[in-house]
Image: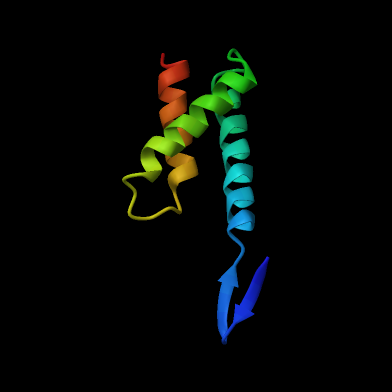
Length: 80
């Protein structure tokens, strides 16, 4: 949700966090699909979150972090 303060759009940081968490849930579901559901969802979700945390510290742009985190988790958990 956004509000206006002195004519500027201000976003609620809790809302932004919720959106990221939802994106990480989708990313984890995609990793599960790619791994043919052979890895427990909680393990995948934790790997996606950990990868996101590692990448977020160095990222110049946040937009693609959930996708990159999914790729990293897939590589770590389901490498062929």
